[in-house]
Amino acid sequence: MNLKKAFIPVLVLGILGLAPAVPAEEFVSIATGGTAGTYYPIGGAMAKAVSDASDIKATAETGNASVANINLISDGEIALAFAQNDTCYWAFNGQHMFEKPLKNLRVVTALYPEHVQLIAAKGANVKTLADLKGKRVGVGAPGSGVEADVQALFQVAGLKYEDMKVDFLDFGATTNRFKDDQIDAGFVVAGYPTASIMDLANTKDVALVSFDEKLMAALVKAHPYFVPDKVPGGIYKGMDTETSTPAVMALLITHDQVSEDVIYKFTKALFENLDTVHAAHAKAKEITLETALTGLTAPLHPGAAKYYKEKGLKLPQ
Image (cartoon, rainbow, N blue to C red):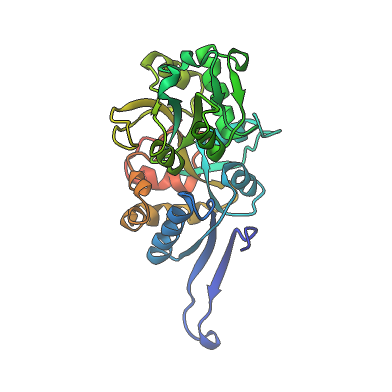
């Protein structure tokens, strides 16, 4: 695997120079995520859809999630990548894990929401965010995107780590602590259904905590990478009612040195062949032209903007 290959124009010449030149092909790589996650199969389906429908030859590469993918993009080491819009926001503005603003980031499209899922043991009496006071709470791995999202939530809700006993846990450790009755509540940020939560709900009596409308509105105003959304009832065992919760958007991003023509052709081929992408994964069905501009946290690439203008979409300011 070579993530340093961004895009290479190839001109196919006619035999002995006598035949007309065939149109140039562009080769692009897409950094996704681990093979067990959602990004990789969806990225592979995107690569196939675009390659089959245009002169762009795309391949999906495994990646190491949002922060690593964003750094590859900013350094110009790859042409396209998956990243969450919260992490993209922090990168563009030089916040949290990014020491300086990465102003060369550009967005191709929003993909689908990844939800802030606050899991609580049913016996812990956690019905709202405020009920976390005095509880044992998993807030994400140290310095992770999950923890940064939790910090944003707590800021708006007027909560502090000192109000509870916090534990810095990744997804797997969070659900394992529930199984051992070592935490009362924990945060996971991922698209539903999340495998670790499904597994937990099959063995423990847990629930998702709903966020009220007033808190949600304040959160979105203070931190524009959040979008209000819902987790439907019936997704997890024992959780039959709809849960209101903020979400962040998965994005497909690029950088400002990838040509307008390449990104235009990629975007056009992607949206005009979405059936191939939708067939790859249940979450991919949420990728639509209607939601392509939802929750963007860096400027649109001009090539993508050109396609959306042709389709009559109102571009974000």
